Length: 242
Ligand code: ADP
Ligand code: MG
Image (cartoon, rainbow, N blue to C red; front, top):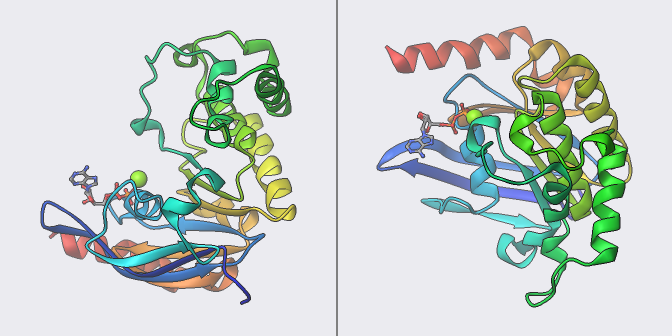
């Protein structure tokens, strides 16, 4: 691989002394879309937060295009899992999309006409123009994820991390989101998605990363999400829990 877009080296993260992610290393090339698959509690969300440096790791290193995360933060868009979002926050769909433009503004610049036009355009791309002024908590699950995707689009990020974006989402929204993600990937974006549906995973992604605290497999999706490997990943959590 030439310069990887994302490189994770020996990443270990724990919460109050309990290990959540142990010694994970992988690289993702530009223009690829990777599923992160594993049972509940496998450390999938923790891995994304570790890549974003939202959590300080115990050990290991993450570089984006060869640089530390802190230096390229504005190039990384993040859509957290539903449970991590405060849906009562008093913000409408348009202003949520507008947030995507903030990282590229200087510290002292407020978003203006230009940024508002970008936010509107991104809402339009995800089919949410008619709901621009609606508070995000009042939207359906699929509409909410579209708005978060609009925010990611507005950021024009090279790296996009999404945590279970299809949970609680209607089939039409899911198709639209996948289509947009594929377009972004084909335009060169590097996308990591925590994905729970094993049936659709092989259709949606080119690569997969099978995680159960440790990285069990990483590579082309068809080689990673095999019945044997999945059984190993999903059984060992039971073994841990006993
Ligand atoms: P996944 O996203 O694969 O379901 P998580 O990354 O959310 O898994 O969690 C991995 C492990 O870390 C789980 O055992 C979970 O209970 C624990 N964990 C996650 N977040 C926290 C937290 N903020 N404080 C303490 N433990 C946590
Ligand atoms: Mg999670």
